[in-house]
Length: 175
Image (cartoon, rainbow, N blue to C red; front, side):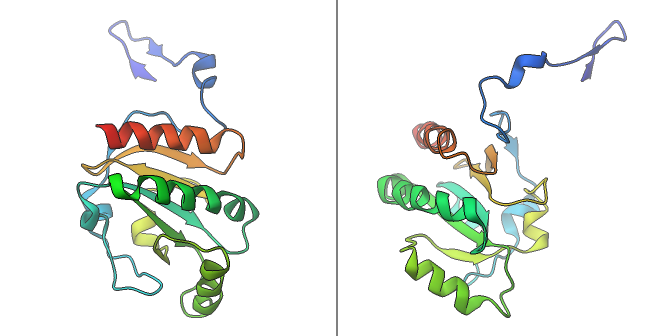
């Protein structure tokens, strides 16, 4: 909580989370650390990227793995969002937590089998530490055109996550 003038600690009401999906953080945007924007991310089939490369675009970063059931369930939603909003300034980047040394073939085959239409790369601790707060996947982060974290989704709820993610993306693209 925050300190008030009377020395009391103010706390959020117990029901403050009632309008958010489980594992979804509040929508207050947070400036990302500069090193998160400039850390090099190794991609599966392309040259390394940084978040700064996407300045002016809304970026969805999804941490996932081929063996993760909820990740497999949410990938078609990312494909659909990429198709629908890519021309309007949305970039989706999937970063697997698997090992680039041993799992590149598996991840490449997975991407083809699932017809993933957005770039895939490798999560690295230096980049992930600026975003990830729990040791769990999937985790999805929506980043504004000016490099601010707008929303974080921890886990995937088939009923709640897709419409909430879509709403955050639409709002971010409209700004």
